Length: 410
Image (cartoon, rainbow, N blue to C red; front, side, top):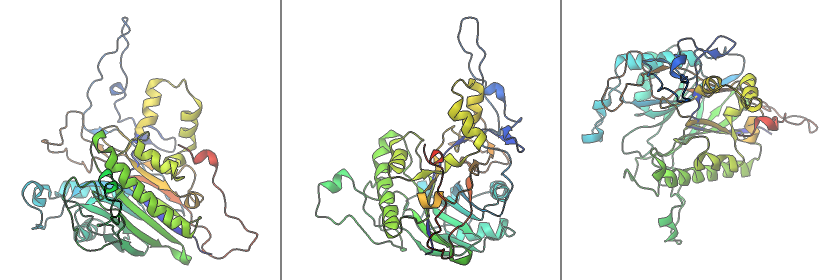
């Protein structure tokens, strides 16, 4: 029986300190003095000096590709093309955010370095914008297939996929109702809805009854009939006051996944993208409590050992380790790759990584400053490799490889 793979790619944000070479040591371009403080005789610590633009989080070079398949997720921050969308005007006029040549070229360089076989994206304006970007800057990447559907978001960006393998059954959930307190006041109301590919029926900025940005669900068809279902997500942004909305979105996505797993408990499912949630947040914990696994647990063996065994690690070394898995320039880990147990069996151990890109510097104010040359996004791409298994029927006495339980916990 063929295994069916479901991918939910959400924001698995991990802070990553730049590393070079096979040793994955901290990148020398990182200003270590900015991470350390001088201890005075009085026992007080001096303020950390500010850093300018440069590599700061993640690793400098993506691991060398093997025969495994690489999946990646990348929030490319307000990627609007140069065609005016008349439905976006005033405060949300898309022409104010038109991507300039330098940033488009910088994004393309990052994607070339990443060399993912399937790349899930957040904050893309449209399928047309994605096709233009691919055909202009990524012509040599082999991304024959792409998909992007209206997510129902008032700012006009959505989740997308670039793939070297066929994409099947794309769908969004524009009219799906979330379980909220207001819904509980009307128990007779139907809270479910079929997936929709049409225009968003409601683009109210703070409508807690719906996904702020609908997930994009797709199936990827690999050779020999191996299938993968991916949920590309971008949870509601904002501080703690939006926790309820994020948790309602997470609950619905988990409901989708459980429905997939009810048909095949061994289905390969991945949730990927920008979760806007830190590792210890209630939203992130919901996925763990649902029995879904964290791609972060498939980071390098050396890093796992350091973090789990050396409780007396010096602060500077601990900071460097944390920085290697930071996914946002604010210093937070908010982007994730979340796995079903069936799919986790096929992940290449030690393959999870965060790729470094240019940090704009501590003095940079995104609300008013022009980003420095070479800047690509406020997020850093995350990736993991897997080797498809069970693409053909096996003898009855053959069992699937089981993942190491020690790699399946947060």
